[in-house]
Length: 127
Image 1: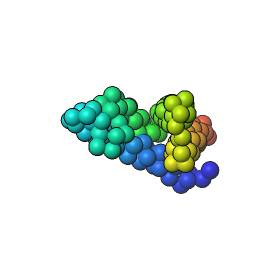
Image 2: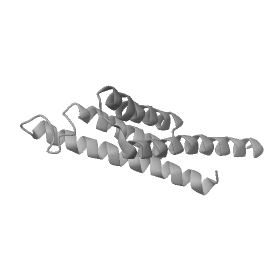
Image 3: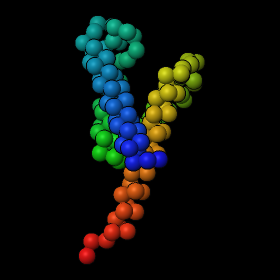
């Protein structure tokens, strides 16, 4: 993986995570202010506000090239969109799988970034 691709995959990862977190946060705020307890689309509840905040925090972590953040967001995404939906009788769909692939690429890119960074430090030690 070239360095330009590494940066691109990290950028895709944090943008998708930030968009997902922002959308979840806005919809859950609409659910809090609504009379029915769900947003106008019927997707989220007020409890999803915590999910949105977690996603936004992990998006910032991916932006800072954190390996742990990229792994956690992949695990959370797979848990919410695959395990929970399948066990509740739903279908996760193509879009959830597509986002999971983006998060997986962000994991690989963050690890590759730190590998390149550490190997360049070993070859050029500061004296």
